[in-house]
Length: 150
Image 1 (cartoon, rainbow, N blue to C red):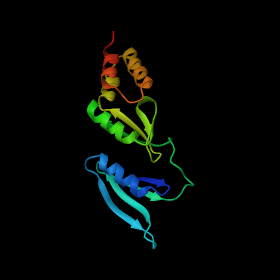
Image 2 (cartoon, rainbow, N blue to C red; image 1 turned 120 degrees about the horizontal axis):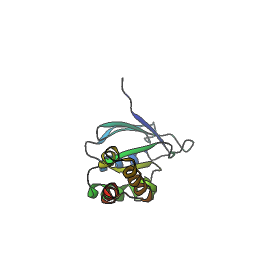
Image 3 (cartoon, helix red, strand yellow; image 1 turned 120 degrees about the vertical axis):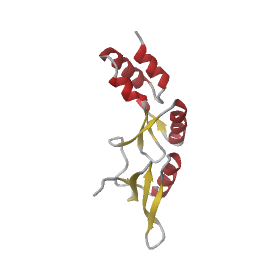
Image 4 (cartoon, rainbow, N blue to C red; image 1 turned 60 degrees about the vertical axis):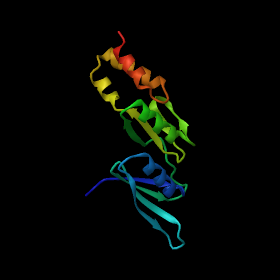
């Protein structure tokens, strides 16, 4: 038994899978299914080893921010590059969130965020969260500075 994510999209399954797999290591398209006319119906792919299926189901069920993909970046350079790639054709949102060109909401966070919050006194955690919520793309040093502020 296994669990994976199924994405219902409107005619963009192949483009979505191709784009996402180009952005993350240990990723690739596993299988593409087509109907009798040769149109792509379903694309099975992995992102950093995790399985996803994108299905060209039509416009009846659009993607919403109620579910998002979450990724953590080790460095500011890595975060900046991924942010540029994912916001190309999309829109920036608050606190490290964005909606990409396919309508998928992403949370692009630094790996250090959990440690900053876990090791913080309540006041420091509040400063880190306030700084986070004031940003669009995350600035790691600003979060570290908010944590250290006396």
